[in-house]
Length: 300
Image (cartoon, rainbow, N blue to C red; front, side, top):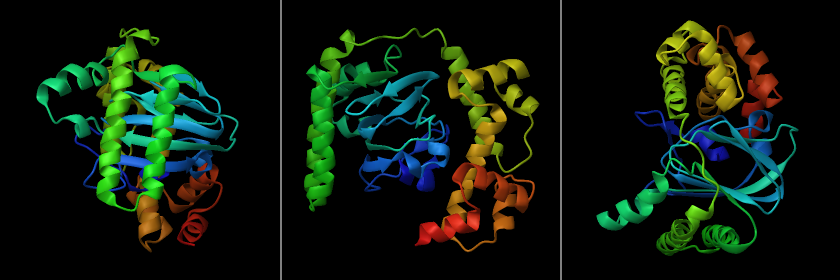
Protein backbone atom coordinates (compact mmCIF):
# COMPACT_ATOMS: atom_id res chain seq x y z
CA UNK A 1 0.00 0.00 0.00
CA UNK A 2 2.67 2.41 -1.01
CA UNK A 3 2.04 6.07 -1.65
CA UNK A 4 3.88 5.69 -4.97
CA UNK A 5 1.32 3.05 -5.84
CA UNK A 6 -1.42 5.59 -5.13
CA UNK A 7 -0.07 7.83 -7.84
CA UNK A 8 1.59 5.46 -10.27
CA UNK A 9 0.09 1.99 -10.26
CA UNK A 10 -1.76 0.54 -13.21
CA UNK A 11 -3.85 -2.62 -13.23
CA UNK A 12 -3.47 -6.02 -14.91
CA UNK A 13 -6.06 -7.71 -17.12
CA UNK A 14 -7.70 -9.20 -13.98
CA UNK A 15 -7.50 -5.76 -12.34
CA UNK A 16 -5.02 -6.84 -9.74
CA UNK A 17 -2.69 -3.96 -9.03
CA UNK A 18 0.52 -3.59 -11.02
CA UNK A 19 3.04 -2.40 -8.45
CA UNK A 20 5.25 0.60 -9.18
CA UNK A 21 8.54 -1.17 -8.40
CA UNK A 22 11.67 0.77 -7.47
CA UNK A 23 13.21 -0.64 -10.67
CA UNK A 24 10.52 -1.43 -13.29
CA UNK A 25 12.63 -4.38 -14.48
CA UNK A 26 13.05 -5.97 -11.04
CA UNK A 27 9.85 -6.86 -9.13
CA UNK A 28 10.59 -5.47 -5.67
CA UNK A 29 9.11 -2.43 -3.98
CA UNK A 30 10.83 -1.09 -0.86
CA UNK A 31 9.79 2.15 0.82
CA UNK A 32 9.56 3.90 4.18
CA UNK A 33 6.03 5.29 4.19
CA UNK A 34 3.67 7.41 6.27
CA UNK A 35 -0.07 6.93 6.56
CA UNK A 36 -0.92 10.62 6.21
CA UNK A 37 0.03 10.32 2.51
CA UNK A 38 -3.33 8.63 1.98
CA UNK A 39 -6.78 10.30 1.88
CA UNK A 40 -8.45 10.01 5.28
CA UNK A 41 -5.39 8.01 6.40
CA UNK A 42 -6.63 5.03 4.39
CA UNK A 43 -5.49 3.23 1.25
CA UNK A 44 -8.04 1.80 -1.20
CA UNK A 45 -8.60 -1.96 -1.18
CA UNK A 46 -6.61 -3.84 -3.85
CA UNK A 47 -4.83 -7.11 -4.53
CA UNK A 48 -1.76 -8.32 -6.40
CA UNK A 49 0.42 -11.38 -6.89
CA UNK A 50 3.20 -9.87 -4.81
CA UNK A 51 3.62 -10.73 -1.16
CA UNK A 52 3.18 -7.56 0.87
CA UNK A 53 5.13 -6.96 4.07
CA UNK A 54 4.32 -4.13 6.47
CA UNK A 55 6.54 -3.34 9.45
CA UNK A 56 5.19 -0.60 11.76
CA UNK A 57 8.05 1.54 13.06
CA UNK A 58 6.14 4.36 14.81
CA UNK A 59 2.48 4.62 15.77
CA UNK A 60 -0.07 2.00 14.82
CA UNK A 61 -2.50 1.09 12.05
CA UNK A 62 -5.27 -1.34 11.23
CA UNK A 63 -4.96 -3.73 8.29
CA UNK A 64 -8.01 -5.05 6.49
CA UNK A 65 -7.39 -8.44 4.86
CA UNK A 66 -10.47 -9.93 3.19
CA UNK A 67 -12.64 -8.02 5.64
CA UNK A 68 -10.76 -9.17 8.76
CA UNK A 69 -9.34 -6.25 10.77
CA UNK A 70 -5.85 -6.81 12.14
CA UNK A 71 -4.38 -4.34 14.63
CA UNK A 72 -0.70 -3.55 14.06
CA UNK A 73 0.90 -1.75 17.01
CA UNK A 74 4.45 -0.39 16.90
CA UNK A 75 7.20 -2.96 16.21
CA UNK A 76 4.83 -5.52 14.70
CA UNK A 77 4.09 -6.34 11.08
CA UNK A 78 2.06 -8.41 8.68
CA UNK A 79 2.69 -10.53 5.60
CA UNK A 80 -0.27 -10.41 3.20
CA UNK A 81 -0.34 -13.42 0.90
CA UNK A 82 -0.79 -13.33 -2.88
CA UNK A 83 -4.13 -12.18 -4.34
CA UNK A 84 -5.75 -11.21 -1.04
CA UNK A 85 -7.92 -8.10 -0.78
CA UNK A 86 -6.19 -5.71 1.60
CA UNK A 87 -5.55 -2.15 2.68
CA UNK A 88 -4.22 -0.30 5.71
CA UNK A 89 -5.83 2.60 7.55
CA UNK A 90 -6.19 4.52 10.80
CA UNK A 91 -9.75 4.95 11.94
CA UNK A 92 -8.57 7.66 14.35
CA UNK A 93 -6.63 9.46 11.55
CA UNK A 94 -3.39 9.10 13.49
CA UNK A 95 0.04 9.11 11.90
CA UNK A 96 1.86 5.84 11.38
CA UNK A 97 5.36 5.30 9.97
CA UNK A 98 6.10 1.92 8.43
CA UNK A 99 8.18 -0.10 6.03
CA UNK A 100 6.20 -1.21 2.98
CA UNK A 101 7.87 -4.01 1.02
CA UNK A 102 6.32 -5.87 -1.90
CA UNK A 103 8.15 -8.86 -3.39
CA UNK A 104 7.02 -10.87 -6.38
CA UNK A 105 7.11 -14.67 -6.06
CA UNK A 106 8.61 -14.60 -9.57
CA UNK A 107 11.92 -13.62 -7.97
CA UNK A 108 12.23 -17.23 -6.73
CA UNK A 109 11.04 -19.07 -9.84
CA UNK A 110 14.48 -20.33 -10.90
CA UNK A 111 13.54 -24.02 -10.60
CA UNK A 112 10.04 -25.30 -11.43
CA UNK A 113 9.99 -28.07 -8.83
CA UNK A 114 11.24 -25.74 -6.09
CA UNK A 115 8.75 -23.03 -7.04
CA UNK A 116 5.74 -25.34 -7.13
CA UNK A 117 6.71 -27.32 -4.03
CA UNK A 118 8.06 -24.61 -1.73
CA UNK A 119 6.91 -21.19 -2.92
CA UNK A 120 3.39 -21.99 -4.12
CA UNK A 121 2.90 -24.05 -0.97
CA UNK A 122 2.75 -20.62 0.70
CA UNK A 123 1.38 -18.28 -1.97
CA UNK A 124 -1.48 -20.58 -3.09
CA UNK A 125 -2.44 -21.66 0.42
CA UNK A 126 -5.96 -20.27 0.94
CA UNK A 127 -5.85 -21.09 4.67
CA UNK A 128 -3.26 -18.36 5.23
CA UNK A 129 -4.39 -15.04 3.70
CA UNK A 130 -1.99 -13.27 6.06
CA UNK A 131 0.56 -13.90 8.80
CA UNK A 132 0.90 -11.59 11.79
CA UNK A 133 4.54 -10.78 12.59
CA UNK A 134 5.57 -10.11 16.18
CA UNK A 135 8.98 -9.36 17.65
CA UNK A 136 9.87 -12.81 18.95
CA UNK A 137 10.95 -16.09 17.36
CA UNK A 138 10.75 -16.75 13.63
CA UNK A 139 8.39 -13.81 13.16
CA UNK A 140 10.93 -11.48 14.75
CA UNK A 141 13.55 -12.89 12.39
CA UNK A 142 11.40 -11.88 9.42
CA UNK A 143 11.04 -8.34 10.79
CA UNK A 144 14.83 -8.14 11.15
CA UNK A 145 15.22 -9.29 7.55
CA UNK A 146 12.77 -6.61 6.37
CA UNK A 147 14.88 -4.01 8.16
CA UNK A 148 17.99 -5.37 6.45
CA UNK A 149 16.31 -5.18 3.05
CA UNK A 150 15.27 -1.57 3.60
CA UNK A 151 18.81 -0.63 4.61
CA UNK A 152 20.17 -2.37 1.52
CA UNK A 153 18.00 -0.10 -0.62
CA UNK A 154 18.98 3.06 1.25
CA UNK A 155 22.70 2.37 1.74
CA UNK A 156 23.77 0.25 -1.26
CA UNK A 157 24.32 2.38 -4.36
CA UNK A 158 25.06 -0.55 -6.67
CA UNK A 159 21.73 -1.66 -8.18
CA UNK A 160 22.96 -5.16 -8.99
CA UNK A 161 24.09 -5.73 -5.41
CA UNK A 162 20.70 -4.55 -4.16
CA UNK A 163 19.11 -7.18 -6.38
CA UNK A 164 21.37 -9.92 -5.02
CA UNK A 165 20.57 -8.80 -1.48
CA UNK A 166 16.85 -8.74 -2.23
CA UNK A 167 16.89 -12.31 -3.57
CA UNK A 168 18.94 -13.54 -0.61
CA UNK A 169 16.69 -11.89 1.97
CA UNK A 170 13.45 -12.90 0.24
CA UNK A 171 14.65 -16.50 0.06
CA UNK A 172 15.50 -16.51 3.77
CA UNK A 173 12.08 -15.06 4.64
CA UNK A 174 10.24 -17.65 2.55
CA UNK A 175 12.30 -20.41 4.15
CA UNK A 176 11.11 -19.28 7.61
CA UNK A 177 7.50 -18.97 6.44
CA UNK A 178 7.56 -22.42 4.78
CA UNK A 179 9.10 -23.92 7.91
CA UNK A 180 6.62 -22.36 10.35
CA UNK A 181 3.39 -21.62 8.49
CA UNK A 182 1.69 -24.67 10.00
CA UNK A 183 2.07 -23.05 13.46
CA UNK A 184 0.24 -19.87 12.41
CA UNK A 185 -3.48 -19.26 12.77
CA UNK A 186 -5.33 -20.66 9.75
CA UNK A 187 -8.63 -19.48 8.27
CA UNK A 188 -11.71 -21.13 6.81
CA UNK A 189 -12.00 -20.95 3.03
CA UNK A 190 -15.81 -21.00 3.06
CA UNK A 191 -16.07 -17.38 1.82
CA UNK A 192 -14.20 -17.90 -1.47
CA UNK A 193 -17.42 -17.58 -3.49
CA UNK A 194 -18.23 -14.27 -1.81
CA UNK A 195 -14.70 -12.99 -2.38
CA UNK A 196 -14.86 -13.97 -6.05
CA UNK A 197 -18.18 -12.14 -6.41
CA UNK A 198 -16.68 -9.08 -4.74
CA UNK A 199 -13.63 -9.14 -7.01
CA UNK A 200 -15.96 -9.34 -10.04
CA UNK A 201 -17.87 -6.30 -8.81
CA UNK A 202 -14.66 -4.37 -8.09
CA UNK A 203 -13.47 -5.28 -11.59
CA UNK A 204 -16.72 -3.99 -13.07
CA UNK A 205 -16.32 -0.69 -11.25
CA UNK A 206 -12.71 -0.50 -12.44
CA UNK A 207 -13.79 -1.04 -16.06
CA UNK A 208 -16.65 1.51 -15.93
CA UNK A 209 -15.57 4.15 -13.42
CA UNK A 210 -15.62 6.88 -16.10
CA UNK A 211 -19.31 6.20 -16.80
CA UNK A 212 -22.50 6.49 -14.74
CA UNK A 213 -22.74 3.28 -12.72
CA UNK A 214 -25.75 2.20 -10.67
CA UNK A 215 -25.97 -0.20 -7.76
CA UNK A 216 -28.01 -2.50 -10.04
CA UNK A 217 -25.12 -2.59 -12.53
CA UNK A 218 -22.60 -3.46 -9.82
CA UNK A 219 -24.78 -6.17 -8.29
CA UNK A 220 -25.42 -7.75 -11.69
CA UNK A 221 -21.68 -8.01 -12.35
CA UNK A 222 -21.35 -10.05 -9.15
CA UNK A 223 -24.40 -12.21 -9.95
CA UNK A 224 -26.14 -11.12 -6.76
CA UNK A 225 -28.95 -8.84 -5.58
CA UNK A 226 -28.41 -5.26 -4.45
CA UNK A 227 -28.65 -6.09 -0.76
CA UNK A 228 -26.07 -8.89 -1.10
CA UNK A 229 -23.83 -6.56 -3.11
CA UNK A 230 -23.93 -3.90 -0.39
CA UNK A 231 -23.44 -6.51 2.32
CA UNK A 232 -20.29 -7.87 0.66
CA UNK A 233 -18.76 -4.41 0.31
CA UNK A 234 -19.51 -3.66 3.96
CA UNK A 235 -18.21 -7.02 5.16
CA UNK A 236 -14.92 -7.06 3.28
CA UNK A 237 -14.13 -3.41 2.49
CA UNK A 238 -16.08 -1.63 5.24
CA UNK A 239 -17.42 0.73 2.56
CA UNK A 240 -20.54 0.96 0.46
CA UNK A 241 -20.20 0.27 -3.28
CA UNK A 242 -20.74 3.98 -3.98
CA UNK A 243 -18.04 5.09 -1.53
CA UNK A 244 -15.60 2.53 -2.97
CA UNK A 245 -16.31 3.83 -6.49
CA UNK A 246 -15.82 7.42 -5.33
CA UNK A 247 -12.44 6.56 -3.78
CA UNK A 248 -11.39 4.79 -6.97
CA UNK A 249 -12.39 7.77 -9.12
CA UNK A 250 -10.41 10.09 -6.87
CA UNK A 251 -7.40 7.80 -7.07
CA UNK A 252 -7.63 7.68 -10.86
CA UNK A 253 -7.85 11.46 -11.02
CA UNK A 254 -4.49 11.90 -9.29
CA UNK A 255 -2.44 11.00 -12.36
CA UNK A 256 -3.82 13.72 -14.69
CA UNK A 257 -4.01 16.14 -11.76
CA UNK A 258 -0.31 15.77 -10.89
CA UNK A 259 1.18 14.91 -14.27
CA UNK A 260 -0.55 17.44 -16.52
CA UNK A 261 -1.92 20.97 -16.53
CA UNK A 262 -5.43 19.83 -17.49
CA UNK A 263 -8.21 21.94 -16.05
CA UNK A 264 -10.04 20.62 -13.00
CA UNK A 265 -13.40 20.36 -14.80
CA UNK A 266 -11.93 18.20 -17.58
CA UNK A 267 -10.28 15.91 -15.02
CA UNK A 268 -13.58 15.61 -13.19
CA UNK A 269 -15.56 14.54 -16.26
CA UNK A 270 -12.85 12.16 -17.47
CA UNK A 271 -12.93 10.33 -14.14
CA UNK A 272 -16.65 9.85 -13.75
CA UNK A 273 -17.65 12.94 -11.74
CA UNK A 274 -20.80 14.76 -12.83
CA UNK A 275 -19.32 18.24 -12.46
CA UNK A 276 -16.14 20.09 -11.57
CA UNK A 277 -17.70 21.54 -8.42
CA UNK A 278 -18.77 18.10 -7.13
CA UNK A 279 -15.27 16.75 -7.84
CA UNK A 280 -13.71 19.62 -5.87
CA UNK A 281 -16.11 19.13 -2.98
CA UNK A 282 -15.43 15.37 -2.86
CA UNK A 283 -11.68 15.81 -3.27
CA UNK A 284 -11.58 18.28 -0.37
CA UNK A 285 -13.54 15.84 1.80
CA UNK A 286 -10.98 13.04 1.29
CA UNK A 287 -7.71 14.94 0.82
CA UNK A 288 -8.31 17.96 3.03
CA UNK A 289 -7.75 20.53 0.29
CA UNK A 290 -9.02 21.48 -3.16
CA UNK A 291 -7.53 19.71 -6.22
CA UNK A 292 -5.60 22.78 -7.43
CA UNK A 293 -4.13 23.25 -3.94
CA UNK A 294 -3.12 19.59 -3.86
CA UNK A 295 -1.47 19.90 -7.28
CA UNK A 296 0.46 22.95 -6.13
CA UNK A 297 1.54 21.34 -2.84
CA UNK A 298 2.72 18.12 -4.52
CA UNK A 299 4.68 19.95 -7.20
CA UNK A 300 6.52 21.91 -4.53
